[in-house]
Amino acid sequence: MYTGGMPRLWDETIEAHRRAVQDATLDATAVLVAEHGPISVTMSRIARETGIGRATLYKYYSDVEEILLAWHERHVDGHLKRLVAARDGAGDAGERLEAVLGAYAHISHEHHGMEPGAHLAELLHRSEHFGRARRRLEDLVRGLLADAQESGGVRGDVSPEELSNYCLHALTAAHSLSSEAEIRRLVMVILAGLRPVDHRGG
Image (cartoon, rainbow, N blue to C red):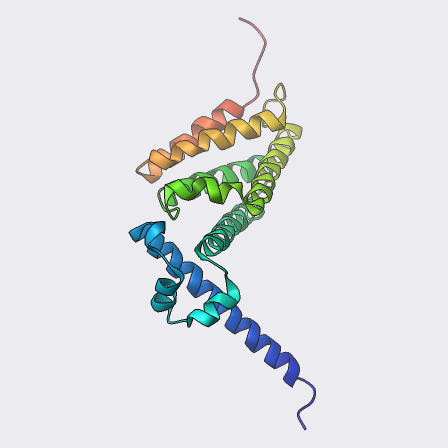
């Protein structure tokens, strides 16, 4: 009796439910771990916090560690999308580089201390997804630097790889800054270090 669009509608409804369950689980777990520490967080507590039945929760995740890894993947993917949007919304090579460095500085500043427990950093950063995301970040910044070198806006006596490392490490200083003006000055200092060097004279 029911033909045509019904199976697709059903699939879309199931998928929307799945995403809602996963998002609620990740959000609640991150908050619980940040507030109480990872040792106190159990699958039962997450189920109570979200209103999701334990049996349903276990269909998606086997334990709290798996939830934290999934949260971290979503967290990092969101950062990368933000950086790509900053790049795509800028103009020439120099403007694209400045936009991405500025966005990364803000991300570093906004999310400092928001990881679900600093002592979990080793677990999260060892994950395969984190390694892939880190490579994507490095490729993005390295590509922007190479483009800026070609246009003459960035010094050419240092490889894009080395300059990328310089930028990403220097931008971690945004963790400890307290104002928009300080973040902006940090980005300007980093960009100053990237400018072409005039070797003429003294």
